[in-house]
Image 1 (spheres, rainbow, N blue to C red):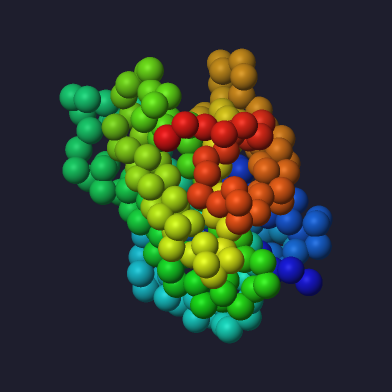
Image 2: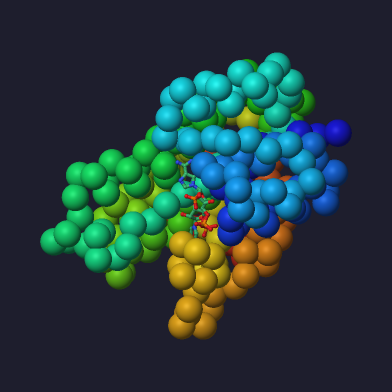
Length: 228
Ligand SMILES: NC(=O)c1ccc[n+]([C@@H]2O[C@H](COP(=O)([O-])OP(=O)(O)OC[C@H]3O[C@@H](n4cnc5c(N)ncnc54)[C@H](OP(=O)(O)O)[C@@H]3O)[C@@H](O)[C@H]2O)c1
């Protein structure tokens, strides 16, 4: 049975991804900061994990044990309210917290679980980025911490793809579109917003189809490549 670890599985896209992987026959470990919400409904192993805490990451890795991980999906993320993340309002606290969850956490969790990934015959690591992290695609401005944290996550995971290519690790960088989750106030008033189940199902098609030749590239939910 293939194995998967999914962060952010208590809510939104991470939860939908965990459900899909369980359906697809994966032995899933679903992790999140809080374990008292939607995580409880998942028929799989569950774990409390704060991706901003090195102690929490170490304890998660240690309780996971020595077994292989075929798929690690770093989905957990945060976005500060727009009024706290604008040119005249963004603070060091908002920048630090946003980078800690969206950029540093996925890197440090991947680092901690690397021994498990390298035990897999076909290891894959995904990170949920965002199109707003594309520098080339930026025409709207604002969202300093969130945007830069996703740009940096793109850089980190491209780097992982380079460093881990000769070990056979495939890295997939994802954009889900605008999704109806608590992060977007359930997409209220945004016509193109989709439910997390649709975003995760389409992204699963992307993740499943990628091999080493595609590693370290940035993919839209609909399957096309996004510019850096
Ligand atoms: N929704 C969109 O339109 C959209 C668009 C582009 C990219 N994304 C990205 O997609 C990912 C999933 O977002 P979503 O929309 O599904 O949001 P969501 O429903 O708010 O889910 C995010 C999850 O991450 C968890 N989390 C926050 N801080 C954490 C930490 N320190 N350690 C572990 N888990 C933590 C949250 O836990 P708590 O709620 O308990 O704090 C929550 O369960 C994020 O990376 C987001 O940036 C979303």
